[in-house]
Length: 474
Length: 128
Image (cartoon, rainbow over the protein chains, first blue to last red):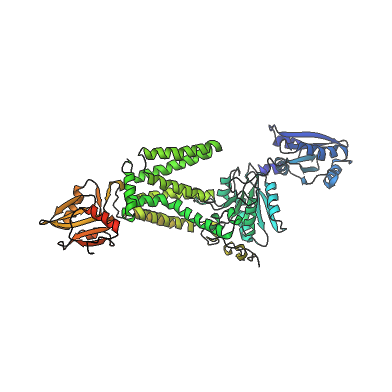
């Protein structure tokens, strides 16, 4: 399409042909000093009042010249007062500007000029919904990429901030910005990111999964290889650490790469509280990660194979609670895990108020009734629920989802081989993680710390990111 | 190479020699008493189940066979052995290494013994 457009001459007929059958396409003839000019725009993408005041009015009233060529040059040289004026000489460029909120004026035979008259943001910034903190900033990314870059600029007022913009998606022509800080970010990482964006050859680049899968090279893994955030302050912090940022038009998120497992375990709240409290919570988070991953599998292994590892009073208690249950421990655990996933999914797809009710009804009422009816044992219910709750402690939803999948895998191995199965599952997981790379950086690279260090002690940036300037502070 | 290793690891899990026992079928034992009754040796567990045979191993086998539940000796904490029983071969291998063995003259009523032991921390009329 692009090549065909480039070859087509820049005429009124061709522009109209390009946008034929498009109800929102606006074409207007303008008479200027005896010459006929054409203005084009896409309704809804431009601010009509601004277009009338800053383009049509000066063209009609002020622009003068003996020929179209003279009109073209005087318009380009400032007689039409607009912030951005882009000269165009091919149909492809005109089409691109039109779908990006420009009003294009065609000077037949001389060329065209695109004036930026975009509509303002569809919505203003609001507080982050997922990454909410008690003390942190309350602004979050929106769907408009230019607003998002401005938020980053406000947090990171450095003239060294670089923003490379490109379009991805043959049909959607989605604007994507690569953001980095010159003098800190390893330029190799930036080049890698740019190269990956250039190699993406798809029709649409609209969904978060498209960004994550294409940018990360779509490895066969459930683990996130890119960090998403809805907080400009966290995004800016990542850039300051030497990571590469990615902003996509239409997505109220910023992406950071490279990432490793320890970075994904960090929460924006960690920098919002004192380092001792934050360290304690971080340790708790790591414990939650292991509990969420292993608890159902370990319980299954102990109950089905290794009863001698359970202390006597606990064993008696478990046996008593299991006596009336008609299912095996394996069936019980797998069924409960599936039920938990179903509950979680139903809560997501329902409106917030109803979703909460469903979770309460599902979790408490149905769970209690099932235990009382003797369908499931309370210990199995506790094991699965605690694992599920610990999953919610993880700060990154993609990481929590990966743990959900691996929880099933390890439970199945545990059902077959007991503790040996659990160990085999962990070994496979470890091998899998050790083979992952995010933008060329090893996923298990020890770039972070389990504890949150005192800020005055953080003298250097992470070595694994290979920053151009390692020193963070004196 | 990595995938082959994954497959081998998963296959290895299937060959682990484990005996699967549903936990609800277990009858965990906390204390066992071994004493002589006539020519035979009796093995009694704290739930009251007992069996007699010519030696300890056979008695243990019999008690396991006769019980509808799976007698689970691994959980045993106390083992009371009568003074006139010299050999507990066949039983010791089924117990944990840290099981507390008491030599005593008493026979039977294992549950009461355990209860007393729990209450006082040790059995005063027995010598370890």
